[in-house]
Image 1 (tube, helix red, strand yellow):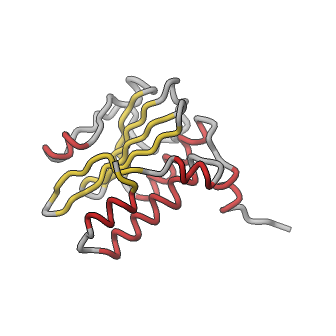
Image 2 (tube, rainbow, N blue to C red):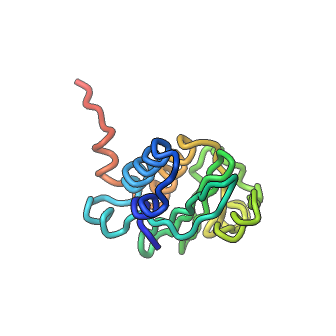
Length: 166
């Protein structure tokens, strides 16, 4: 497993502008939703666990783990995010219709099927499930809601976006 930055350095993608934006989003924004201290973010960096080819490019499958709380695999396919979640306890439905809880998410390519981690729909098992999301915004919102449902909502993320009102 490589860190996200390590995978992109090794890959040396042709579209560096896109890659650097995705790396910044995954490393800076997503990690802040799961950990409360920078030392925890450093110790539990988002990793790339596999990748798959699509239309001549390699796409990463990201992985983040909060020990004893949650494991999350996520990747983009055809402009949509796929997210697989595994937790020891059922995740409360706090997702406000962000995804179809009974939708079975299937691989969009043979290679994605081997690289990605697929579980049943949320409605079938709220401890091990896979959802499909439509945008980076939806992915961020999903992770925000998931981290709050698991009691992981961090002071670090809250203070970063806190606006003081007089």
